[in-house]
Image (cartoon, rainbow, N blue to C red; front, side, top):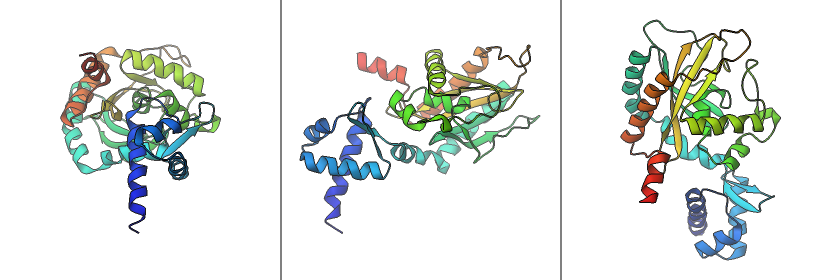
Length: 269
């Protein structure tokens, strides 16, 4: 048993290195920076790949964090302390905006809802605590996805089967999804209009950890029907987005997180 400890430590060092890099890394770089033998490095990477903590990109011959590592890193959000911090902030948002408030996280390529706060006149929604929905369709999911590296998004959505549809709206493949994520990252918030349930729209913004990584999202859902039936009107609800973003920013600060914008500013200094 004690002989496994050094290997475990080396494996954790590999994961730590990959977590600090914005892009996948060649095995040779991992071996050099961690001062590991080349053969041992490949053995560690193969074990971590088998367990899902590392993914290999053949075309680039590089290694990055796998889905299991992302899920492990987000798991602490399911614990009670974060939900206790977020709950009163959501109530304030619900009172101010009038829609249903949510706190959600990514679970693989799905949005998992941890909290749902409903207004005085509740709406009938498919979302609820513990419910999972396709992340590419939900504003909650896309608010986090748009801040992930393209390689990570590709790993979460590797084929057409990863794009189930609930209505006739929403991204249908990786190209569609990337275009939407690019727009939403630039805008600063995500919107889905009838992608999950006809007659309802959602605005969401990401919550970030100390490394400026998206670990949760705050969202508000409202009733909405586009003027022309069957055609998405393109409304983005900037006033509601301002409230949602402020709530997400407060939660980020409360848990000791940093937004990517703040982090970039610190790097320039």
